[in-house]
Length: 132
Ligand SMILES: [Zn+2]
Image (cartoon, rainbow, N blue to C red; front, side, top):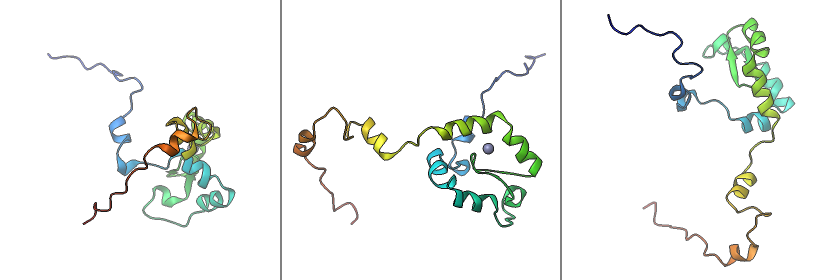
């Protein structure tokens, strides 16, 4: 007999391992926000030359999601989808910058640590013998 297969055993769990692969890594939100959404770059991305390597010859591209679609209908329905709307909302948030990262690490200018402790700390010695 064996166990009956239950349908829909995995609710919204997508293939996270595949999504984490380098091969399928898309553009990051800050790349899109700071580079792709620039009107000049956006126009270039939306009017790409025919590319036989890309889905739909690279003619149906969603700039916000950095994704190619096979047909115009697919792109239109994507624009109405939840995924795209969620992505647009995420893109409205300010981009995560190097300053944010440094502030999170306590290295920012408005950090609690006074500047004097940073200056007195030993600078990282530059190891010149790494490449020999
Ligand atoms: Zn989209």
